[in-house]
Length: 224
Image (cartoon, rainbow, N blue to C red; front, side, top):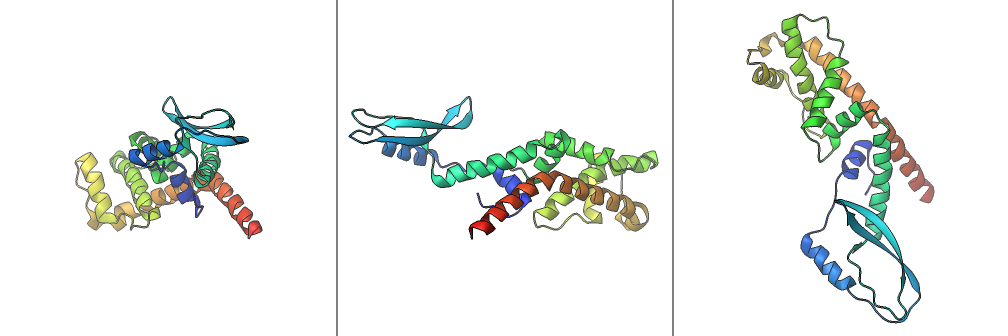
């Protein structure tokens, strides 16, 4: 796992790079039965326990025995990936639950509807838009979700949502017309407040991950 940025590290720590079933079978066949003289070796294996892969380290005495194990030998690169990913996941787990969900929605390759739902609630409840009229508040509530979607697009390298896209997004959820021609007058200030709030929450979520990334960079600079 190559460390480039906190956002990339969050994504890659939750991305399981698995070989194909045929590749695993071929490797298992190569590992197969081993026999012959030799000294004690350490073999690191990846085994499945209740649906989760865990690392196991075995002492293997080759002299006078045949050795057959069903796990996958961990390559040096995979061990390094698991170590790095573990440190990133510990940093993620240090966050509050709501910030974890927000970060997962933005960066996890396995983000789900619950991540979006919790992130939406976090953005809306902290937006400070409680003083709006009920009609505007109803639309601003869905604009908060649009702001999340727009921010996710932006940090992934795409353009964020413009006024027309935001109005269509809200219309789809409320069934009421939202005219983009009135954007500057009625909605620009609300949109800017929501986008600024999402950006602030994103920075909070990335802070512990960024600290781990910085430690890796300092280590690499010292090793260079």
